[in-house]
Length: 175
Image (cartoon, rainbow, N blue to C red; front, side, top):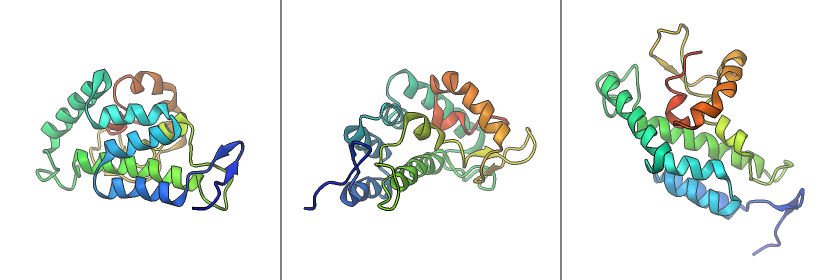
């Protein structure tokens, strides 16, 4: 075991810790990923995401309801309209993977971060890849970055959206 690396007064997440988080995501255990990251860093956003992933509490109930609406419209796994909706678990996995990528980038040995990203940064990782393509009536999903105006609108609405479900609100927002 090597000595811990300290940056900005905090211990940097180790490669082993990042591997544990990555392994959880590879096995589809989003809740375990969020709860483990919360235990490592005390991230409030990770705990919120864990509630959403497990449909726990009020925020989890809202996520469950939003997922139900998406599934009724597009099918449980996207098979009814595969070109329009890849399925809620696919999208939720992308949200978790996006958070992991930001965490890993922050802990990069050549960087200046520690692997503990801010709650706002964590929250924003759920938004960049998930938006409808051109036109507010479009129901095709794009894994491209949202426009600056869309990000500003989502940021200004984030307090009310966060009280419902960040994972699914991104997939229903019209920008």
